[in-house]
Amino acid sequence: MGYLLFPFRLLAVVIWVLAGLFTVIAVFPFVSLSLRQCLIKHWSRVLMACCGVKMRRRGEPKLEGPVLWVANHVSWVDIFVLDSVRAVCFIAKSDIRKWPLLGWLVAGAGTLFIERGRRHAVRAVGHQMAARFASGEAVGLFPEGTTSPGLEVAQFHSSLFDPALRAGADIQPVALVFLHQGRRSSRHAFVGEQTLVHNLWLLLTSTSTCVETVFLPVISAGECVQLGRAAVAARAHQQIREVVEAEAVIPPQRAS
Image 1 (tube, helix red, strand yellow):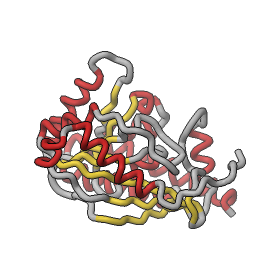
Image 2: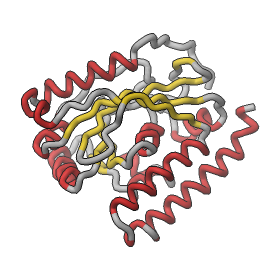
Image 3: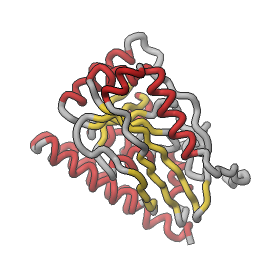
């Protein structure tokens, strides 16, 4: 059944991504920030529907004012799942900018790209984050620094927590839990040497794909300052890990 759905889903995704690119180029320069954010949110919801991804939400997301959403990282899908809740300016590796269509789209939507390995990369992104917080926006951070199979959470890098603390923004941990046919699965993880094309094939030929987004308690700006960035990162990591690893069972090796 999944293979029969593939051409229709792929066509829908390509058309919708092209529509998004047109919107970024022809509409975004002439509309307000709030309208751009509304368009991003609803566009992301439709994209996930085109991909056959169902979304479930638990907890209370912070939907107003500056906030740093800190999440575990499993796939490129993560960005659009979170954008479906609130338009978020994500911090991403500069490699993503080179992806066909999707890379151009996330760049046009305001993603903050970091050049890993460059001496002043963190400082430069920190200045951009501060500007976004000052305008009341949400910034998204994947502090593992890379994707994982989604059944455990690697250690967090705390350096990019600093701009949130300096700007007086709240920090909210978010756990992303991927399920396939009702069970925990690493099928859709974008890891290792896998290409974007292969990952898309696995996603668009799947049925009953679901991503649960679990919004954990907000760590207030005042508490963040008291704790310091290392302790805040450690708390966020522990809270996300407890959700992600709860009853996670490593599935059998998937077929390529």
